[in-house]
Amino acid sequence: MGGTKILTKDIGTPNLQQIDVYIGKGGYASVQKALKTMSPDAVVDEVKKSGLRGRGGAGFPTGMKWSFIDKTPGKPHYLVCNADESEPGTFKDRYLMAENPHVLIEGMITASYALGANLSYIYVRGELMYVVRILQKAIDEARAKGFLGKNILGSGFDLDLHVTCGAGAYICGEETALIESLEGKRGNPRIKPPFPAIAGLWGMPTVVNNVESIAAVPWIVVNGGEEYAKLGVGKSTGTKLISASGHINKPGVYEIELGVPVEEFIYSDEYCGGIWKNRKLKAVVAGGSSVPILPAHLITKTVAGESRLMTYESLSDGGFATGTMLGSGGFIVYDETACIVQNTWNFARFYHHESCGQCSPCREGTGWMERVLHNIENGHGKQSDIDLLVDVAKKIEGNTICPLGDAAAWPVAAAIRHFRDEFEWHINHPAEATKPGAVYKEAVLA
Amino acid sequence: MAEATEKIQFSPEAMELVQKQIAKFPEGKHKSALLSILHIAQAELGGWLSPEVMDYVATILKIEPIEVYEVATFYSQYYTEPVGKYVFEVCHTGPCHLRGSDEIIAYMERKLGIKKGETTPDGMFTIKGVECLAACGSAPMMQCGLHYHEHLTEESVDKLLDDFKKENKISRPFPN
Ligand SMILES: Cc1cc2nc3c(=O)[nH]c(=O)nc-3n(C[C@H](O)[C@H](O)[C@H](O)COP(=O)(O)O)c2cc1C
Ligand code: SF4
Ligand code: FES
Image (cartoon, rainbow over all chains, first blue to last red; front, side):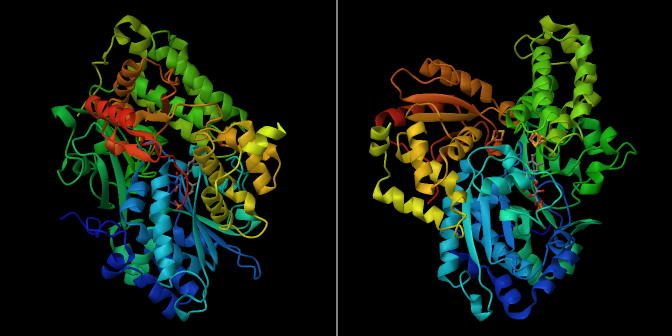
């Protein structure tokens, strides 16, 4: 029942945040094993074999990313953990760091060894200052036990690990903006290439990985990449933390083995526990606010009628026409009372607020989309506004320095693609649509 | 100006914390500590970042004041205008909205007699709408200082307000 748990299996153990309790559960075994018995390349190989894909959103194979790092001798290498977690609908990294901080510290040590990094950072979004303090305590404990510092466990490997913080800016989750921020600057994304693996923090080779990606490394090193690859389905190996929110009975963070059917995830008591208040399902945003919204009938089944699974491949089946993405695993559920126009406006406001302003399509386009959506939502929409929104979204997409532009365009384009009639209803029946609590009644529910 | 700058100074404890942040970075890379130091400055030196406070931070890091202003105005957690003693940063992004953040904000506005973005005349409370704080599973929610207050209801808001009025529960966030 419930599938294998890797990251969350010990959560619930009293005082798991204390290093002795964590070690009592088998913690820090990967540091012992890697530093004493494996070469750095052998660690990279295990991560490659595991098929682990980046859990920050893009799903890029972690082992492959590690092998891109510039190995020129004499250059320092850095590992930076992305704990900026700001994608609306995503709250798994916060949960993991607060409940099980040592699994991240252990992962950072083992991964730094694999990458030849002697100085590493965990960059936490500034709002999560209480998590910064939990991590600082965990780092201090790890240092006192000899897992950090000079000549760790007599292996000759040195590592300093620090936790540092942002100060409120979604864009700092984008890896090059994060690096700028970590250098004490505004979070303006850099033009790529060069990629961080060649020139990252202070111009040196740097790997940026999500909290959850790094936290999976200890289990992979201890149990072997092949064991990890046995979990999940096809190229979606292992387990994934899903942040479930919105109109469900049991919001929260769930660790699933990739491959759970979406329907089971929504309705089973083990996970979301069904739609709240005995209402019907209208739509789902499956991977954080940036991924396309899908109506009820497309989220549980593909166009071919196959049951959709919680995997990278199955969720994206059908491309953007009828599919979506696993993204960061921020699973937002909408019931029959949710207004798609209002939700789309809300997300458009978010992206406009968070645009760093460097590129004009993103800076101007996000504001434009926000204003047009605000008009429609408030009963001042015009029929031509719908095509205007589609047009603006298209002009942003692919024309910006960083993917925030796409992330702002996709939700708008997808909402219109699947809920165009609801936008038209708002425009054609403004008096009715702007009544408090009014909802479009013709939506297809499940 | 010179006079104002002289008065602004970290306490020895805060200075120790500042030095700890600087020590996290290699020689010559001390500017990386700027964001952390601004959090400490905001907490310790009056609750917001006045130009004088920013200039003081620049002198500590030996960087140009403009480098500090650039950063202070980019990040939403820094206040470049005075705010209330307690700032209620209520999340109003999609997932919180689905679980009633608008209603909670409206309730706070009625209770405090101010609108989102304003501060009560006695300088006690500010209501601020903020974007997703990574707590969507426990919506509606808000941050006040170091603390997250989740699963907000009208009753829990009442209790928080009473507690804040009764005792000094102020807790400003900065890294340790
Ligand atoms: C606008 C934007 C915001 C992002 N926010 C985050 C974030 O909060 N956390 C994260 O891990 N990755 C985020 N990413 C992805 C990172 O750029 C990067 O791909 C990731 O940290 C790599 O780690 P991974 O390979 O382990 O997933 C964001 C990307 C963009 C474009
Ligand atoms: S796409 Fe938007 S957020 Fe990204 S660099 Fe351009 S303006 Fe900044
Ligand atoms: S939407 Fe409010 S915490 Fe995420």
